[in-house]
Length: 421
View 1 (cartoon, helix red, strand yellow):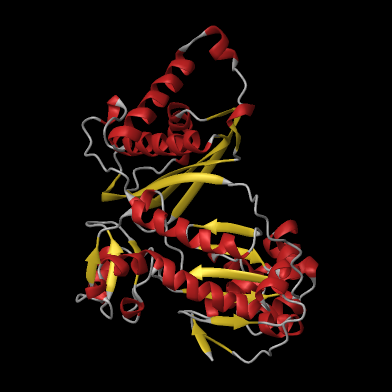
View 2: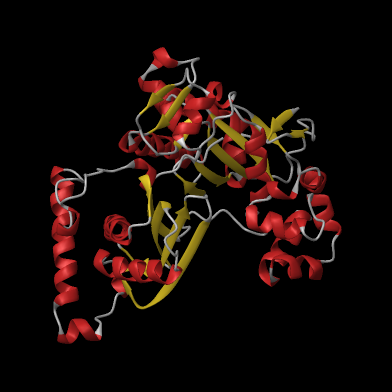
C-alpha cells in the first residue's frame, strides 16, 4: 500500500502490461535531492531548501516532510514545525544542470519525451518495447540510470493514459514504481478523492463539493450536465471523461511552452503602491528577459497578488500586439494592479506572467514603432541589458527605477518551483 495526502492506494493492481505505454517520471524532492548530492553529510537529516526572511519553502527532504513541512509553505512556519532542519539556500543553476542531465537520460530511452517541468516528464515507450523490454523494465532502467548519472532518485508511474501515469508516480513516491494496467484504470481512479485529479485545484474542488461531489466515483456517477453546471462546460466535460479513464492526450515532444512568469514574496506586507509597482517592474523585466532568451513574444499579461490574509487575486489583459519588452509588460501589470482596487489592503506577494506565447518572428511592427521610436528604443535597451547580464551576471544591470532597491539576483522563488513529491 502507498499513502499520499491521506489516501491509501493499492499496489497490486495487476501485472498486465500488454496495453500500457505511458510513463510519468517525477524526481523525488528534486531541489533538496540535488543539494544532498553536493552535501552528502546532510543525508538522513531534515533539510529545507529556501531563502531567508519571508520566502517560502522550495523543497524539503522526506525527513523534513515528516514534520509537516512542504513546498510553498512560508519559511517561518517551516522553521517552527521543524526547528532542527538544516536550511540550504537555493541554487537555480545547479537544479537546471541536474534537470538537463536527467532529461538526457530519458531522451536516450525514447524520442517521445514531453518535459512538463524542471523535474518531471511523460514518455511514450510503446516503440521502445522491442529494444528495451516492457514498460516496467524500462521504468526500472530509468530509475537506475538517473540515480547513477544524476545522483537523485525518481518515481515512475506506468499506465495507459497520461493522467493515470501521473497519479501513479505520485503514489509510488519516494523512489518507487507503480503499474496501473489498462483494465484497472477506472477502479484505480474511482478509489480517489476528486481533488486527486489533474487540474482540480481548490476552486474546482470547492465548486464540486457544493454539489456533493467529493470523490472520483461520485464524479463519474453524476450526470455530465450537472458537472458542467458546477465547473463550466469545457472543464466539466473534461473532468467527467477523466473520471471514466478517458484521456486521449498523447505524449507531445514538441509541447509548446504556454507561459513564463516571475513572482516574489515581499520582505514585509505592503500597501504602498509605489513599492508594489517597483516589484512589478523588476518582475516584468525578468519575464521579458526569459521571453527574449527563448525567442518568444506574449499576447497576454497576467497579474497575481496575494494579500496579507492569504487571498489570491489574478487579473489579465490581452495585448493588441504581441511583445517581449519588459517596459510594456510592466505598464499593463501596473494598470491591472490599479484596477484590482485593493483599497489599502497590505500585499505579501506579487507576480507577473506572460501568456499566449508565440515565436518572436511573429512580432509585427506597431503603429507607434512606425512613427515613434520609443518602443524600439526600449527593446534595444533591454536587449543590451541581456548581453551585459549574460557576461557579468543577472544583477550587473537593471532598470534605473530599481537602482535604489536591493538587488535580488536570480531569486529562485521567482523562476523555479520544485513541484516534486
